[in-house]
Length: 157
Image (cartoon, rainbow, N blue to C red; front, top):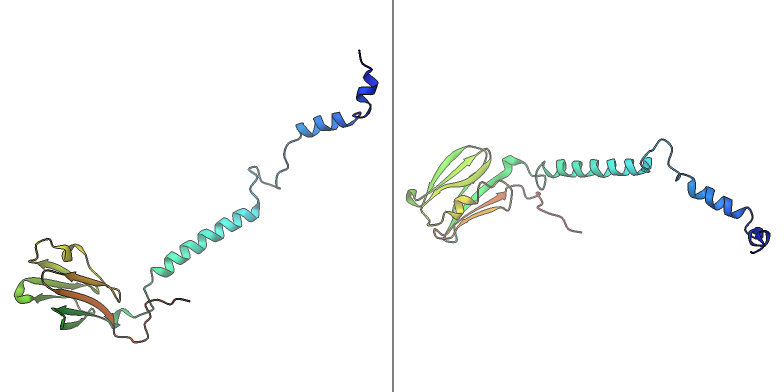
């Protein structure tokens, strides 16, 4: 049998400390039972507020243009057929009654057309500057433009 005093001599006291450290619970932040620091919560709430603020800001309109300054230009076979404001609700007949365009709530849409697939009708209403509806079989294009020369579509740095 070995001499027990020689074996425990260099580890005397250390072995017990090691076992005690193993049994200690992990340190937690004050008042926190899941190990999440207060700064983590503040950071997460800040990110959520910034996200919702951005969504709200983007929903306010594009380019800062006034809704009353937008107009729709209707082209037929590369020639400007008419230019109409979006401020008054009405229905416009085009191509001798073969196509009907409706302006409702400052939006314009093709509501009937004699084209075979009715893709132009499926495009839905448009109301922002730069948006277009095209009916290829009838060679018709409806484009929203702003009458305000200062309105910007996008700024790239």
